[in-house]
Image (tube, rainbow, N blue to C red; front, side):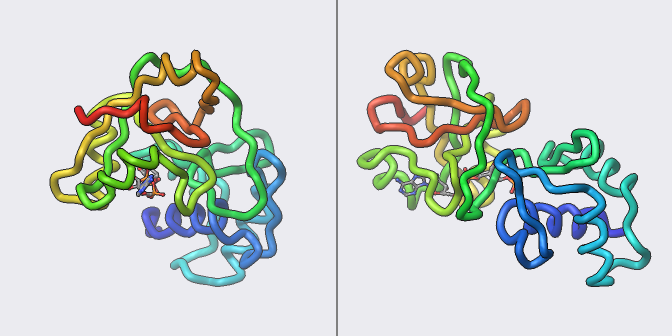
Length: 180
Ligand code: HQG
């Protein structure tokens, strides 16, 4: 079983294009696990039909915790671009958060703040190692930004739980952002 391919397909279905799988996300992004499995198996893209333990394997052993099963439902924990708003649980953020990005995006971020761009939320990292990993997707030597999340939260900016390493926000105005 190609678990990386399967994990990417699940992220695609649950973050970006559930309608291609005849799935409808609920307000928290969940779909029934059996519907997801059935839809993926109809495409026949794997060397055998997938079963629920394949999804459990991905959740347990992936480099990042991208998905979550609760009861008979599964969802992506972050990354959504679907038009329907996915609500996330509000959290009090750690005092400092980080964001890894490209040199190319830097000027725009420093003047306009961090925006969700093509996703529903801005994605922030709880530590610099995670921010570097995120930033390396876009720049071999990414810029790491330090976010004064405590001040932002005190001033009324909302933060939400993604997973243990990822915190989400609607936007981060520029006054809370410094280059590390
Ligand atoms: C940038 C991956 C110009 C932002 C990762 C980023 C993450 C701006 C890009 C998750 C901007 C958006 C999300 C502004 C933000 N002007 N550029 N005002 N504001 N940007 O992919 O945070 O492996 O949507 O810096 O690990 O890179 O898929 O966000 O470079 O957790 O599970 O616009 O996706 O997780 O890019 O990554 P993205 P991201 P997975």
